[in-house]
Amino acid sequence: MQAFEVNFDGLIGPNHNYSGLAFGNLASFRNAKNVSKPKQAALQGLEKMRTLLNLGYKQGFILPQERPDIGLLRRLGFTGSDRDVITSAANKSPELLPMIYSASSMWAANAATVTPSMDSSDGRCHFTPANLITTNHRAIEHHGTQKTLSLIFNDERFFKVHNALPSLMKFADEGAANHTRLTPDYNRPGVGLFVYGRDDLSPNTELKFPARQTLQSCVALARQHELDDTSTIFLQQSSEAINAGAFHNDVVAVGNGPVLFYHEAAFEESSRNNAFAKLNQVLAFQPICVTNDKVSLKDAISSYLFNSQLLANKDGDMTNMRLIAPTECRDNPAVNHFLQALVNDVSQPIRHVEFVDVRQSMSNGGGPACLRLRVTLTEQELDAVHPAFILNHAAIDRLHSWVSKHYRDELSPDDLKDPDFMEECRTALDDLTGILGIGNFYDFQR
Ligand code: SUG
Image 1 (cartoon, rainbow, N blue to C red):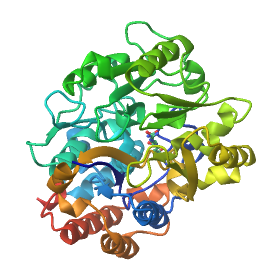
Image 2: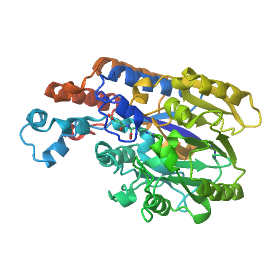
Image 3: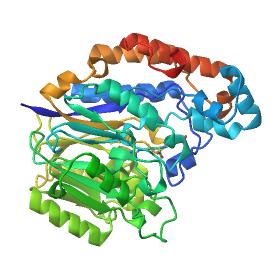
Image 4: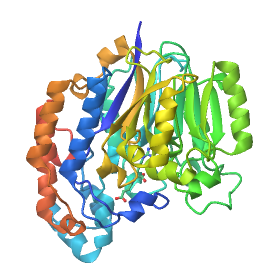
């Protein structure tokens, strides 16, 4: 039976805004309080999905979460009608509004860690929603993520959607942004490469920004997903990369099939040597290291070179791969030059580069790879996925019209204080569930 990689992109919500909420994420800080363009953001996301579809890949999507999270404000003591809750928060604690209004669920690479059925001892595909405990606005996502994944992957014969790991700093988990499945080909068992920034048992005093993933969370995920020791590898991010703004490993490395494309400064050296030795034992591992003299760490992070999607050919051929890179890579002379040389270098399998414009998301630190959750599925498993979340051109067109109808061209930080904007977001989400035929999914619809 043929297996595929399916990318499920986060559909960008009408509340996309710039609030500077993510310490250590340089773009989020730089753009804090800028006016955002929600319609453009969502359409850029949809066009990226269409690019993959046009290239012959399978493409799915994940629902935006309900925002504002009125339930959270109620738990903080705000009362009255939902409009009253927004108005009194705006008057008394306006600093809470960005948190309950963040559109951060768009970055589906942080939705969950995924282990395909070929790798797990129970033969099911496992999902663990990330607890995202490091930032407040993201720590409130995992309940919604679990609900969404349980709707999309709603067949216990094939899928197991776990609870998030406990919301404790010891188990800080940011999902697939720090996890790469490497495999000779999609039909064969693979290896889970878990990357962590911090070992909770040995504090790292060199860090100036938070390391968002712990070794302890990686170990727990591997256990939960029923991976055996030979197919589990732990690898430590370098403090240098985290301090330079690589708040997730997918800012400095991306892998697929037997290939790991990474910046030389991405990992702690001894940890990398151990991990690579193990990878060499279990598969015909193909590391592609980009050295500092070719692309500096600074350029790598500002262009998001490694946040490209690394794709096998549409038929799964791992000798003919492509990168879906952000346009910022084309605009950076050193990175663009590097990419042109890369695709001409036949000693490695990356043959093509496609540039996509996801600038609205990039301005919050989210590139092409942040926007998608990868799930390797057999044909039988794909048939069991909720069909409303697998895209074709007609479905993308419908979502395009939906965005055009409901989203604002511009959103400023002060707009979050207006209860009419809450109603606007709800009307959009209500219409979305109608279009998808999934009934009353969101809390406000109950
Ligand atoms: O968690 N930005 C996100 C970006 C996530 C990118 N994902 C991956 N690398 N996989 C984050 O830092 C900014 C929100 C704001 O400031 O409004 C934010 O949450």
